[in-house]
Length: 336
Image 1 (cartoon, helix red, strand yellow):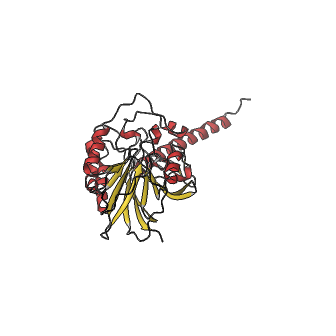
Image 2 (cartoon, rainbow, N blue to C red):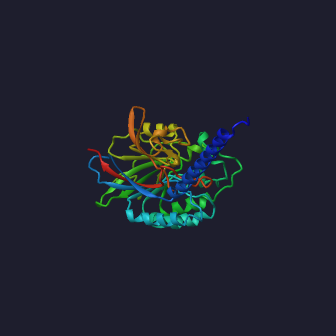
Image 3 (cartoon, helix red, strand yellow):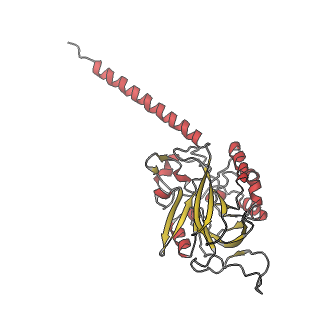
């Protein structure tokens, strides 16, 4: 009697169908990831963080644009953000991914550069990304290879400074931010260089600007690099800004009196699972805080932390899943 081959053939056919199904699912997931990477949104959060009696302030937080010359729709979308009429723009780095992108991102941000703003660097403002295995991203915080090409950082940041944006790279600045109610909010802002590169050197918040009648007053306030003010509670607003939200930086800012912390870098996880969230944060921030508004506690103080999911992706992994690219509007309100 000849042995039956029906069962093995059925197994082969079943295996083939499973492989085809898995391949189709992977292709569908990739296609959706490419679509979602272009599905930009503006998210709005309302935070009661200003001194009592202050008028509301609208902050536009931009991060991780990762612009390449081919990202034409991203450029057009960025130019439209000026219609949001922010009182203050906060840029938390990783603006470009190629040297040719510098004039393009400046053009895209053009209208916003005429508004009060602050910025800090990210690693991709310094170094050009290299092709990499995208799955390496999920193995833990990414490494910075020493042989990466340098980007024209000074051309980018020099233009930001020339436009009037305050450079918070390991320094602070006293800002006078006009509000739409006709008043001016004094903001004591301070930031760091990119903690992901180990370049952060937190120096504390700047001292308040002298009162108008003070003999030491010298016109418009400028950056302060020396001397940290004590913890908040004196009726002034302290803003801490960094690219990568590493715990050591958030702890230091909170302990020194920050009223609000802003960061980017995480891409919100970039690939998230529904019901689970971000798989990684690319730093030591807990996954649950990969994007959106949460709180941070240090030295007996608890303050709001907003981490932007960013607008771009790494060039080697131009997809997003369950994590749409975003610009963030923060409507800052006075405390009760």
